[in-house]
Length: 439
Image (cartoon, rainbow, N blue to C red; front, side, top):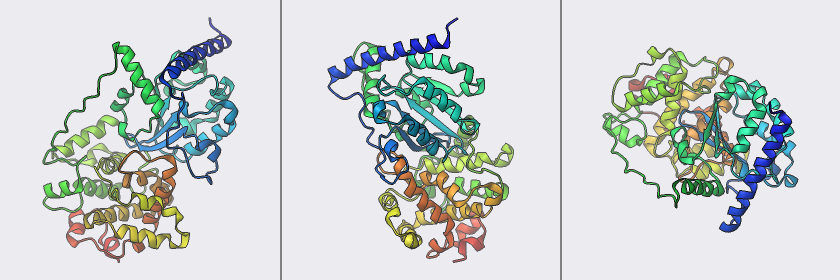
């Protein structure tokens, strides 16, 4: 029987082999082994700026199932003498603490871990013990990309510490393309070195350079399509209704059944069930949330609908203004927020007002549901606006969340300039007329 000490020595040997192979390939290619991801934190006031600036950890919105997506890139780790690993552990906990009350997913890019930058096995054991049930409970999936013998040996070392339930959450991903089955691939922040390594693996597998990826032409949407099409398309295909049917139905149900549900919008639902409901909507078939007896189902459907819009509700145009929001003096932020929202196109303004009015109602029940305006902002901010190109980096979340929190907390002040058309109020019946038209 192989002892833990023997496994550790074997892991060291395997890691040295991997490092030698990387160095040989890296020297022939003429580029550094661990280039920056380009999304490192630039905020020097960040409490862990010394670690965050390397871009090791990124939070990039949600996965396909509405779960927060967190990425760890080994190739972004500097040599050990340039990084305090105790600080790294604190930074990991600091970041995860903002999301572990909700379901979340972790993607680990293993490529680029070398003897010069790897933490010790003692540190890994300490880290696993530090990440207690609070962190493990809501971790729904862990994707290990480009696993090697070193990873598999480490897994054997930790098996005595790892529960069977936690072990089932692990998925090995040999090629980046496999991630498309599980995640919104275009949202991922993938370091250039990892992309190049993946190309080389695919080339080696086929004995030649990797073929260009063929992207099939997009299919025209169905007339009844609700997900993945623009607000304008939905309006035109639904007799001019200003509020999309998915939003009307989910909000209406949640207003009746979910306002006092603890952790509403923080839990995921069964993946296949969400896909089936989306299919029903897209085919124009009726959907009754009563039959599922789970308020988290319409909650996930609402977030999914927002996330799959081709352009976010707050539009691409406002993204930069929202990112600069934290530069505004605190006492002036509500009025600035009001001006930004008033610049929205009329249709977007109406839909945003409808949604924020509902979220304001949810926040009023925070004693029961534990969803304050701040908690709701962490969930919905990334679903209201995102950049036209690339993904939302960890450093971009703070202004986005603050802006969204103000929208919810100061709903009546910010949305007082325009009222929803009466037909919207009556047809959707998702919110009380007094709240919508009070101002």
